[in-house]
Each structure stands twice: as structure tokens, then as C-alpha cells.
Image (cartoon, rainbow, N blue to C red; front, top):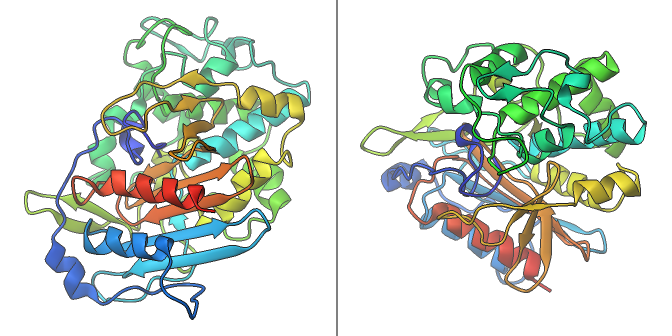
Length: 396
């Protein structure tokens, strides 16, 4: 459920979130699983750079599968895949298959909060206590001093609950159902990271709080609001918020893997209870649906201009090892400078078994890269994903 930096949600890391463990995956396992690539939207000409890049993520970086979807400014979509969907059977990767979208969920949730701002039901600079009175309390934590804006921008100082459950999500607690309040209480049992507004730290707790805010203001379930206000509105036919007890992935998808053990073996963690992520990272989507979402968002189809401007108002993120230098965080939205001088707007998400990296440039080109492991199977795996993302958005 993380974004793409070295400070992403520790438990939901993405291309570079807090020190991601670099676990070597067995190259033999990938080789034994089957041939690649299984490419979508094939062309008669020579391989293009995107397909070549995906194949390298499989052969050199040892991801079981890698997928991409590219949306050109004129509306054309190309989907690609390489590797195998299942290491056990060697099955082909489904075209534009579903993945757990992780922290890309945060952008969906932020959109709903900002829609409520546009409707006059929420004020960005009001304390969270106005809407959830007495709920946010702990050592150095006071909901009367934390604003809605600080919650959405990770400047609240709230501790990250996933720091305390991450290992369990892959093991004994993989099928545990968490209530949102349980997640919040895990965080509030620890002291504040800093005084609100004085620093920045990625915390999944902020978006659990955002989900609770949405439910309090609308009087309706979070899943319904995300679906009605965003998913159905844009016609994202392959995106959904899993229901209570829904541990599988509904449509064709590659399996998701987690590196564990000293031998770097890969465990299939596709089926799990995603409630541990809730508003911070529970969505399931496809690369092409993520492109459509971020393109529509930046094109003004989901928010009024004033709220989109607020969403795009950013603060600097720390340049940590493995992160893209110069990234900035808005309200559930990340601004990433590209090597060609363009800017990409997106988020990113890593959750058990999957890592996805979407973004759209201001000239309307969108791309999403997705791989089927959230713990890097080789030391340079995540940087190579980010390099392919950069090159794809910079292509003419």
C-alpha cells in the first residue's frame, strides 16, 4: 500500500518505501515455471522498449511476471505482459490482469474527501476532531491539532500502524480480519512522530482516518462511496473494493508472491484478507484502469478546479536511498520529476504479492507498470521498475 519511494508505507511498500528488504528470489524457480513473454496487444514489428523492459524485469530481476499498460494522448491503449502468471503451473499472464493496487487506494480516498470539500461538507484546514470528536488521542496526539489537510498529506505526525503488523500480514495474521478502528488503535498506542505540520512521514494511519471521515460525513460505507463517486463514475469495470471476507481476486490475474527465508524462495500470497489495508490500500484494479483513473483525475473529471488545485499543492518528500530525487506529495497524490523534464502525477502501491506504479504526464501520456512481488527479488529490481516507468512516460 505504498507509493514509490523509500518512505512509502512500510507495510505496503512500493518502488522505494522505507527500507525495503531486498530478498533474492530463486532464479531457478522462475526458469522452471515457463517461457515468456506472454504479450498483450502484439504487433508484427520488432519488440518495442516497453516489452523489452518488461522481459528484463523477468529475466534479470527475477519477477515472476511484469505487466504494463500505456495510454497515449490520443486515447490509444497498449497492454503488455512478460513472465508467468503462476510459478507452479507456468500459466500465461492474463492480458491487463487484475492486481492488488495497494496505496493507489489512497488517491481514490483523497478524491472522495476532496469531493466532500467541494460540496461544503468538509473543510481542509479544520481539525479532524470537528468530524470525529475525541477519536484521535494518544501520547503527543491530539485530534484538535491535526487538520484534514495534514491527514491527507502525511504531515499529521501520526504513527504508522503497519509498522506493527507487517510481518504478520504474510504469516500468522494473513487471514485475520481487521476492523478499521482496530487499525487506528494500533497506531494510537504509540507516541506521535512529530508535531503536526512540522515534518512529513508516510503513515497508512492517515488514510484509515480519512476512510473513517468519509463514512462519518456521508453516513455510508467507504466501499460504497469509492464505488459510486469514483469507480462507477469513470466506468472502471475491473476495479473494486473487496468486501468483508473477500480474500481472492475476482477476475483473471497473475499470482502474487512474497520473498521469504534465507534461500530467497517465493511464497504465493495471492489469497489473504486485505482488511489490514482498508482505505490505505485495499483496492483491486488493472494497469489500464489505473491509467484511466489518473488521467481522468488530472483531466478534471472528478474534482472541481479549486479542489484539484489543492490536491496538486505539494510538500517536499525526503530524498532517501532508493527514492526518486525531488518527489513531492500533495493530497493523496505524488509529483515525480522525470528524466526528460516532464512531470508525472500518480501514486504507486505495494501490498503483499504486488507492486504497481502508475502515472500521467501533463501532456496526457499515462503508464502503469505492475510486477508480481512487493519485496524486490534482486537488489536493483525496484530501481529498474522506476527506470522503465520513466522511459515509458518520456517516450515520444
